[in-house]
Length: 77
Image (cartoon, rainbow, N blue to C red; front, side, top):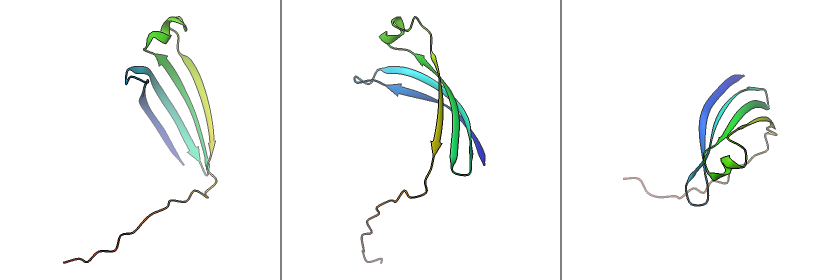
C-alpha cells in the first residue's frame, strides 16, 4: 500500500500546454484509486468557462503484463 500525488501537464497537438492536473490517490493490493482536478490552459477554457473538472479513476492491475526484452549478447573486455 502506498499513497501518491503529483502535478501533470498535458500538451496538445502543437506542443502547447493544454491542461494542468493535480492528482492524489492510493493503491491497495492490485487496485489504484485516484482523484484529480483538470484545469484547462488552452483556448478550450472559453468553452468550459474557466472551470476545471474533477476526475475519478479506479485501476485494476491484473499482474499479467509482460515486458518483451531483447538481450544483445556482446563480449565484455
